[in-house]
Image 1 (cartoon, helix red, strand yellow):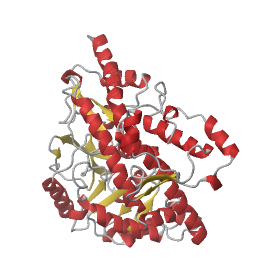
Image 2 (cartoon, rainbow, N blue to C red):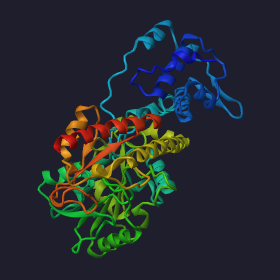
Image 3 (cartoon, helix red, strand yellow):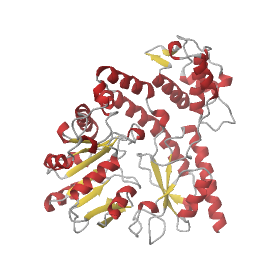
Image 4 (cartoon, helix red, strand yellow):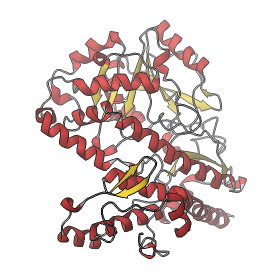
Length: 474
């Protein structure tokens, strides 16, 4: 039985699931929890500790992923034999290690690093290093590792409904790099259409080149097709960034039809569509494209790890030769080291299992965040419950000043951001309830790095900061 008194500290700022996993790990390393020992059921341990069962499940899941625990079907959770992996020096180091300070609470769009499957990933890298070491350092094809491209094509078919071959897949060093590459090759006359509010790096990329941008305001019905379609249009149809919501099927078809009619292109930025918490993920816009006018941009930064810096494009067949001509050398592509291990990870089914687990955990946190926001007074702002994504957009009331609120929240340790930075168009979104003119006014609030039982308190603390600003202004 674990020493429960050592697992939680009421005064610690560390999330409770992390305290539990850290405490159990330390007891396994020092030997007080010996190999083969059966741990209490998650419900029983949660009752003993006075925490939610999901907190213990998260702690157990983390230790299973790291290889300290193993689940036996119909039997329970058991301690693994970790003796060959530890030494007295290692135990001492673990006991005295200092946890680095976090970058702030409630950061929007930021995945929880504790959800990453460390041990399975490490084993996959080791297996590739033994079986195909050359794949870790050498790449012949500027489009990326052929095995990874095959796995991405299969994954896009399973999860996004896209029919594509490996030849159409181009691995990039992140989604932003893929977006910029697509725009650099497709925008020939300096004109394109972007959502407002929308993705800041793409807006900055267009501004740096002096391109003429046709701003498409986001309304409650999504983005509306402009009277005069642009040669290149960038959309986030499955989950609009940053406001949320999805583009109705009729509007998706209208954009695709307009692109086919004028010979234009749709660039679909699909940054976090896997995290849809009601029903299954929506089919991609590219899955509806029968004229070959849609370029799909995907990323592993939200679902897997931002540190890998891997994304991808799925090109229409008619664009493959143009992109190959532009990428004549493998160094034009993404870093090679993680590509084959990621291909193996996907082929084994572990990537799909990881996404399902992450979606389950984030769904719990989203529900807690939305419930907390629903208790806020209306004069602070309003939000729409989209049951998707990794952040919530709070649209501010008329009397609120976004920048003042953001500065106060950041000073209090909250990493929230303002909506206005996503809207350089100079006109407010039809979805925003802030100022009648000017940029959209609102707050982007995250939840993925917080535990469900901690979110209510964190949101209450943020509300107190925002209300303090309001009272001072009054």
